[in-house]
Structure formats: structure tokens, C-alpha cells
Amino acid sequence: MNYWQSFKEYLQIEKNASPYTVKYYLNDLEIFFDFLTAEGLSSLVDVDHRVVRLFLNTLYNRQLSRRSVSRKISSLRTFFRYLEREEVLTGNPFVQVKLPKTDTTIPGFLYQEELEKLFEVNDLTNPLGQRDQAILELLYATGMRVSECQQLSLEHIDFFIGTVFVRGKGRKERYIPYGKFAEIALETYIQDGRNTLLSKAKQSSDAVFLNNRGNPITTRGIREVLNKMVERAALTVHVHPHKLRHTFATHLLNEGADLRSVQELLGHENLSTTQIYTHVTKDHLRSVYMKSHPRANDY
Image (cartoon, rainbow, N blue to C red; front, side, top):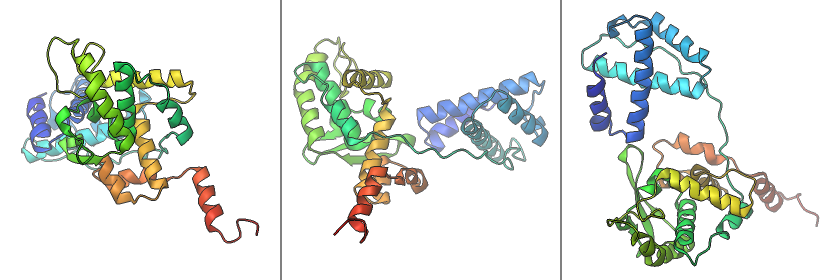
């Protein structure tokens, strides 16, 4: 099967896709190529609606989720559209395939009381504690993705106006403001703990967040940082970086922020992606009702 490299370059250059997106597209493509090989098909010209239906049955037999199947269909639809454009093929066998309906799940988020426990567990007298506090404060203050947090450089933080520069999915760029708590945590870490960590490394780095050896921390390392905080706080909830992103969006909307502003802060391309956060907590609903309904309270 040819066109692998040219399709990869198309995703990287023309679609401006992130490394993660390219990785998943090519992984989906590899699964499809393996299927064609197993079926004895050596040419993409042989792929028709019958082959597509057989491929989908194979995916469902592997008990893949609807979301996973939907992504693979989208990946292959894009691949065959590219082949059409390059005049390799005259049709797209995936164009008529309907994406399976996926269940809409409400994102999990943390209540203020749970957050407060996390904010209190770090030892701010040592470098790692300062780093962990800065990570926690920044993730909650900005709603950035874990990959965006991991890629932050010192030059990306503007302490004068209180913003961070972020390069997100599809290499889209945005500035996100942060508040006083995040500012204090960042300044403490950068001026103190980070220098101690950096002294352990063999070479200099402009990455904001470093590991205990003074090298840039990984996304996995950030997840481990949060896991350890949860253990120290004795919380029974599972906390991951994306849950802090969910919490950021939910709390903003609950406090009256408009959907468009939250969309910009999160870096969502489509407003429909942000709308999943328009749910509100039961406590908030009750609070609004009790304050607003004329007959909610006794005289």
C-alpha cells in the first residue's frame, strides 16, 4: 500500500495537524491496511462498499467503542478524499458511511471543596512541592491541556499582564489569562524551586516544569504529580489533568461566563465542543432557584 508518506505530509503541512492527530490517523490507516492484507486485497482500487462493510463488522467484532469506530471512519474518509484529490482514485467508499451515534457523556469535574484539599497538600518549602503547586494552580487557572502545560517555556509566561501563550491542537495559538493564586505559585516556583531542580541537570532548559533530575517533565510525569496529590489529600475521586480542564470550564459557566469566552479560553474550534460543559451542578441549580423564584422561600 503506497501513499502513506505523502498522506502524512498532507496532514502535517496542509491540514496543520498536531503530532497526536497525525499519529492517530496513521494508526487507523495501518489497521485498515492490515485488514486489506488479511483479506487478500493488494490495491486500494478494490475497496468498495462491500469491503468497507466487512471492515466495519471486523471492528465491531473486536468490541471497539462507537467513538473509536467513528474516529476510524473519519480517518479513512479523509485518506480516501486525499486520494481522490490526487486523482489516484475516482471515488470515496467511505463517503456514504454514517458515523455511529455516540453517547454524550457529561464531563466529570471537581467541587470547590475537593479542589481546596488538593491546594493544601503540597509542601511549599521544597522545590518539588513548589513545582506541583504551580502545575495544579496553572491547570485550574487556565484550563489548558496537559500537553500544552508540558510544552510551556519561560518565554510563554507574561507576568506583567498575567497571561500564558499556548500552542494547542492543530498548532492553533492563544493567550490565556491567569489569576493571583496561579501568579504567586508560578513566581515562587520559577524564582526558587525551579533553579534548584535545574542545577541537577547536565544542560540548561527553558521548559517551565522540570522533573526531579532537572529535565523537562513529561505529560506522564504531570499525571503522576496529580495522582500523588490525590493520595495525600485522601480524596476518593480520580483526578487527571483533563478533569481540571473540565472543572475550569464548568466553574466559569456556573459563575456566569458566556459560552463564547469559554470556547476561546479552551481553544475549541467549534462552539458545539464547548456546549458539553453547559451542564450545571445540582447545588448551583438549587442556589439559583432559591435566590430567583418568588415563592422559593418563606416570608
